[in-house]
Image: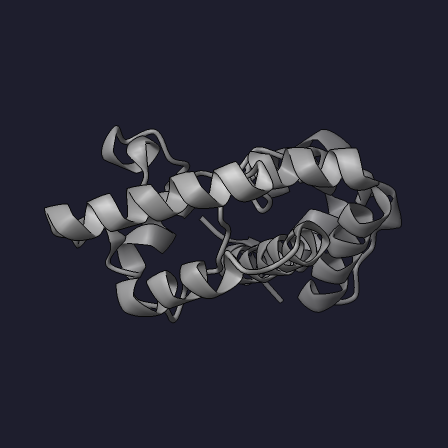
Length: 170
């Protein structure tokens, strides 16, 4: 389903939040934070406002947003518990076709990453494959906490940009 920007600008606040609530994983508060900034002149302006809302929400809200994301190739994916958007994104990167050894590697990296940072590894996987994702995992395990929070938020913004462009027609 797609919607036009004009329709989003004209709909009720509750419909706006319902339509955009999945742009940022399990965090409809982001869409809610920008309802009063309508009308948006472009999809880019809407996305920018949503990212600004995240930036201004404070560290606790940002960490809740980061923690709302699933592990890449994790147990939720195997159990079919991902959002439709996450399922499609992970499938597109080939994470639904891992060998048993590759799955174990992802599982070990997910565990090491969460033990180090306290939240799941987040990467906008569109345009990636399992090899580039594993390389990013290993590289980012060397980050410090503040650097990795910033990187996770940047990746979330990129995921949101993909999703908003998939959903809305200008």
